[in-house]
Length: 114
Length: 115
Image (cartoon, rainbow over all chains, first blue to last red; front, side):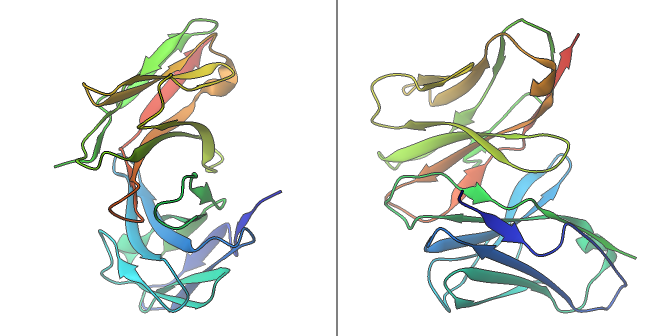
């Protein structure tokens, strides 16, 4: 059974803390994505990566960074968490551009910043 | 311009009835894929159905079908014989096959099935 696994379902952090959200996929997918989901706004792309050590900004990269040292792992980093980063974070993976196939999602990480 | 537009923030349907969730898209890439996802209250995103831009027939998966009207750039999801478990958020998405790696999502439609 193919899987995208996110390290934490629920996190509570304090303002100013550094936060790491980890995502691992076992499908040998080239592409990995981090989305943020807020009510009424749908899914907004934060960053994506199409290869190891490669990354591209999405629609809302401010306040976030990412790391992809291995093909199967894509990490989202909040250098200094703020209350407006309280949200649901979804990791996803897919085959590379030009190849058909859907986006596979992890279960989501609900982050609360106090 | 929005790549994916879902104009129905919320929909209600009687159990056992059919319901159509609207989705329109915007692209100049002749090769693209359209997707529908379901997100129950648990938060997981469940892939429902896929339609390729060159597919001649509308996609179907069990009670789900995709009403693909290419000229109108619409890709509506039809759920037949609604069940209480169909209550969820539904997202339409598109991927342009030639121009990039991204998937574009709509803002979603919240469906409530009434007993």
